Image 1 (cartoon, rainbow, N blue to C red):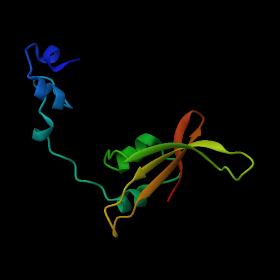
Image 2: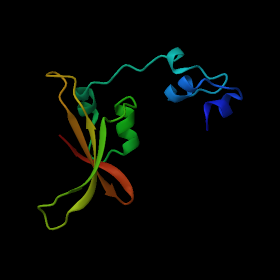
Image 3: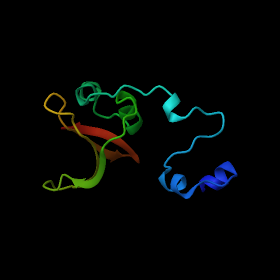
Image 4: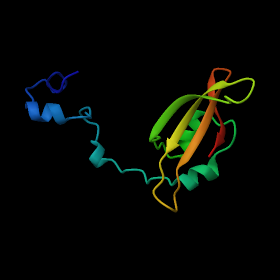
Length: 116
């Protein structure tokens, strides 16, 4: 939906081209909402447990979005390779190293199998 259709008025082209997020009338804009504190990778690592769901990973990371999600094949050097999903959280330097959370499909649900 275009900005003009959303607001029912003419929106300058420069604004329309640069807009990336809209809020509905009555909903505070992102700048008015308190931002959650970023969660360090070490805190996420300490809370991870094998078998956690994607939702549980989101909860322990304070809904931090991974920097990358990679779909790949794991176990390629075993008799039974399998599809896996890797959440990659980039680190913030020496004291917050990169974290990769590996999930595998277990009965149609992605679950944590390991983290590196």
